[in-house]
Length: 111
Length: 114
Image 1 (tube, rainbow over the protein chains, first blue to last red):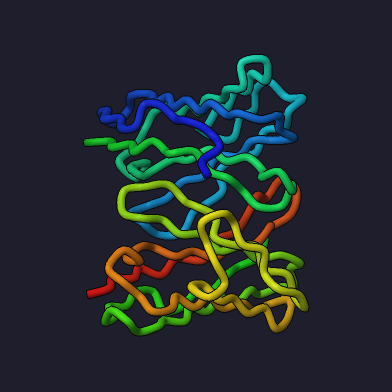
Image 2 (cartoon, rainbow over the protein chains, first blue to last red):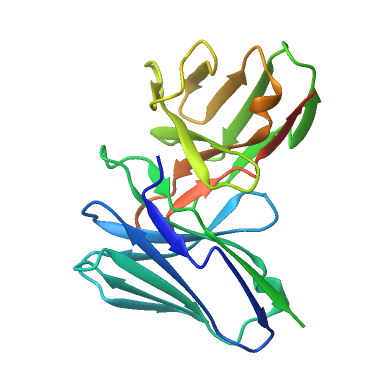
């Protein structure tokens, strides 16, 4: 079952613009992770934010976490055509072992 | 972090047949995970595979349909049995890369059942 919702489902922007994706989840978490998937291929881990962190940066990525609202956002700054992909948030299942994924946001960056 | 080699990358199969997907990890991992991604959808966990024990299946998935083997700490297979067109999906394996590195995924198997 899906852990939560992401919005928007699809996002189209121009190169150089910023892209923001949001994720909501249902249960308490230890951490939340974001992944990217290019064209139905394998997923690539982008960033992990722990439940006691509010914001984390990695290169052009900024992730925020609001545990009181059970939500997270992923900001990609100065987007490039190569950022075109699907982005998923994920949290651990009840057993704390496997990842459960949100529905994902499909980002399209045009040059 | 661990690197996973998954094969085949794609296949077109006749209904009623079975396909076995293999994942090889370049380091020992305790748990491996199998996911299904139906067209245009997110990933759904099929099962968790531990070495030396039966896989743990999620609701809606059964061993007869998706038998899993985990003979050692670096290898796992998922078989999709008695396939129907509804089984057309991308199947992915995964392992925990540890701590901040997140989970590692195989490159996926795109299965089409005709």
